[in-house]
Length: 69
Image (cartoon, rainbow, N blue to C red):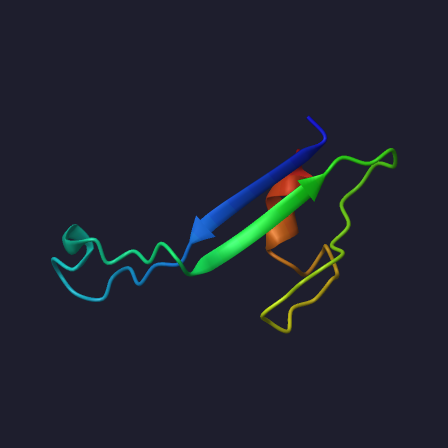
């Protein structure tokens, strides 16, 4: 597999007792991540849309799990 795309839906957890049981998770808003296998080793963030986040893999939480493996 050379390509992987995932989607993590946004949620409003811990709003109040009982709301989670009513399906308060939002399925159309969230984060989408695409991973592409390359010949060079390492993690590199190339595109960020919708937010002003750092491309530094040591400061961006999205790369923390990927770097672990």
